[in-house]
Amino acid sequence: ETLSLQLKDSMRGFRILKGDLCLVVPSASPIDGAVMLVEYHQHRFLRKVKKLDAMNVLLQSYDREYAGESCALPELNFVGRAVRVEFSL
Image 1 (cartoon, one colour):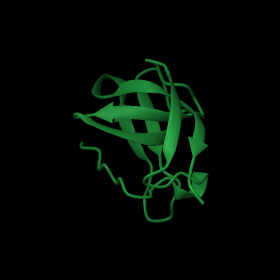
Image 2 (cartoon, rainbow, N blue to C red):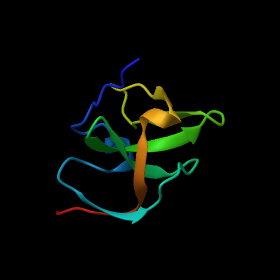
Image 3 (cartoon, one colour):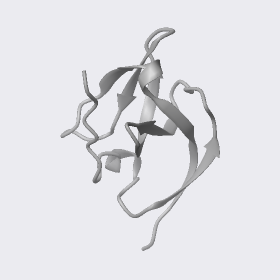
């Protein structure tokens, strides 16, 4: 099973758009309910993390066009938790 990257504005429901600046605090393990910077196959992207069990998480975007995807923890690298977003008016 492969994770579709769905970059662009897949987090727009959280008011996070392409080009916004996010402050990320390092965290190597998943935090349930947090928006986290995730690395998968050398690509990094933000997703809301929901723990399913000890070995799987659901990575959720916040947009009608993109569905959440279940992933095994060994396939992912968690870079950190997003704690602040800055954008230009």
